[in-house]
Length: 295
Image 1 (cartoon, rainbow, N blue to C red):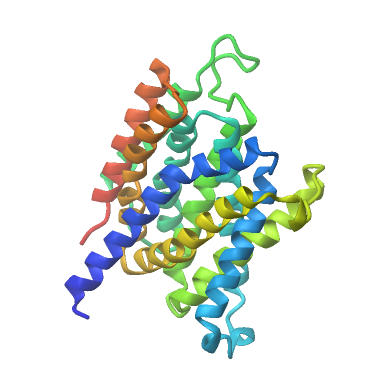
Image 2 (image 1 turned 180 degrees about the vertical axis):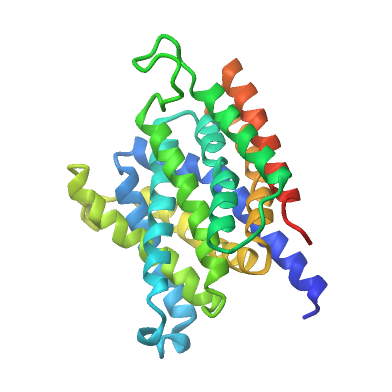
């Protein structure tokens, strides 16, 4: 496969992931409305995905115990990234959650500067400033407990911010771990969500429902999520492996378009004025972050 074809597949993979994450919140909300919590639905959907992928790639299991230890960190960070995203969109407004999540190019710039030794020029500094300003406008609440300080208003805000930080760190770890295969990185993501979900159950005071407690409709929804997860995760991992960390984060901005349309028609959610202004600055910052990379 030529370099041009590789790049096209990588971009397609990131766009596919953006479409998936821009709409998957709806299916997790359907499950929550049916009594299946975000942690439980995340656990089961990723277990199914891991089993499906394990059967597909059974011949590649040999040597799994010889993988470098960085894959553990990749799995744990990616696990929290995915789980916290689900928890955020279950409790908060979809577009607000996603816009706070897309502060990730800011965190990517910082991580890439100190870890990947990528130079941060004036464009990068401008992106950092605009991203912080956008976050300040979105989080500003003069009548709130913290006055003018841009402190997250709700639990979903914290989940969204931490998910964006986790996404940036996942991207950078993926780029840094070029010796790991795409299959290994994908399995790390799936198993990471499973492990993190199990760890979070007692922390959130929840218990895992038995498989027999789930209805046929629950399982059909979980199977649909899992099926797309298998191919979506592989494509995204391929994309972030082939494309620079900053650029990958920006391509994912297509999720905003998908989520805006889906949240309006499926959840009838409307953004406030400060969310629109702050979100616009975050988007501009993300675009500037892409230009920060020197091709």
